[in-house]
Image 1 (cartoon, rainbow over the protein chains, first blue to last red):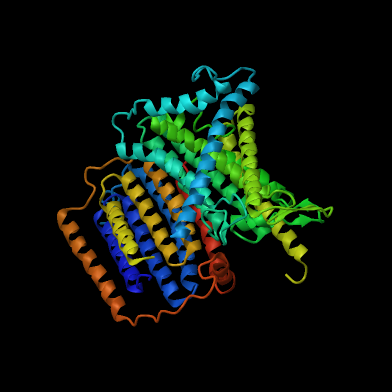
Image 2 (cartoon, chains in turn purple, yellow, brown):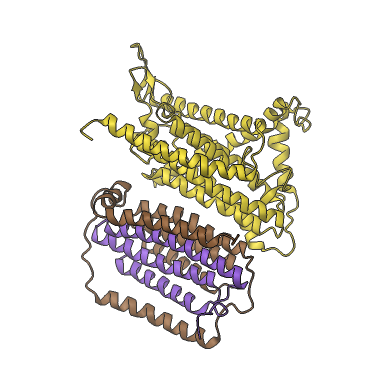
Length: 101
Length: 365
Length: 163
């Protein structure tokens, strides 16, 4: 007997909320990035669970695209963090807030 | 319940086979290297006067020494990561053997048992996934040693591994194109087909370039000479596993040799017919000149498993001979070979294979 | 996948996700992220998505998090003195997170649950995914390859040392 769809969607919601929590409370930009990846994965879980429930492969195709876009985003984001670190010697989000007034 | 027991038995069998071949590999490493370097090799340890050409030394004395040595953890390191790194290096490589087929089928008591521990229909991708996970052992081993040379070795090693994963993946793509399946057992079965009635259609005939790319990338993945700069015995002490002693060092060495056996197993399955014995079908030999020899199913399975084991030993021996023959690549030469040599070659091979397949299939494709 | 196994794995997943966001040491956070991703791959296997599960391990756990680890080691990030925001923000964020989870779960329960249709043969296999990818979703596929090219060029341009 497979677990009902609601359980998978509930787990996905909890993981997404943990990711949001991570983005809000951590000051290290790399850990903020990891929390963003966690949010993307929570959404992937939703897509795959719904794909199976509806019997359609579209959900899995979208997960494929989400993974690709997440890879591209991680590469560019980490490159940005590297170059900011070279300028400012810090990865603390409070100290990197130079565009704020 | 019976299915679980059968799967457990298959898994146990393949792990024992791997450990035996690995032990043989370690023995070869010392004896074959000695022969190549015109010396005798280790032959002093003996039980009751029986030294067995160095077998007792390599297979009994060495493991006992490793297991009884003190486990030194350097001060100021992260103990959790120090403990985890050898595990992350060994376990993914051992687990990959679950999808390697070691025989065709065994017909026992009315059941037909497929001689492959896990029948995944995406077997090739599983291999790539586990090889990707093995990178963590290297990275974390270098970091957790609190030693800048280990860190250097760890970073170099993991950069090398992820670069050559790509070349390996491309070689696998062309093989998948040829066999039209991702399941290793189906690939092994497809190589029983006879070309022109007499030549077994082994993968090497269809994809010689992919064989070369895969072999090179496999040796680079396991960080053996000529690609062993991360371990660099004369340069970085022991590279990323300098600060490991005793059982953890044994696990790193084991993962090295198990990866050698893994590359040998994959090369035989993809390019040399795996468990296929030429002209042997499920009910016996069928020679192309018309003679046939009927054999019971257990004899066929035994012959196939023996053929697989022999091919494994041959390719393990080959990698060991290569190790003791070639000098080490410099790091920039290594990276250049991976990115500017094997990657374009792999891409061209995929395109050419796809073209040949489409043209050979004719207008119906 | 039996419900008991699901609950066990779900508890482990939530625990490792919390470790990612709460732990002070960034390397430990990255290792916890790998564990979370591999557990999610197990969930995908239970949902008949074998190809997506293995892609998750290869791409996410095997490449993206390795990239994270490289950057952490390159920048030599240690445990930092002020890893989290002030108590007021943490408290508000925690309440907000719980509220968000409750909101999502309630909204999903109120929406009409999709009728559990059976899965067609060959669901989750490579051929089925490839068939959709190269026919219906061909344009996004080509655009994604362009996106990856742009990302590679951008990452190299950004991370190069100014000469």
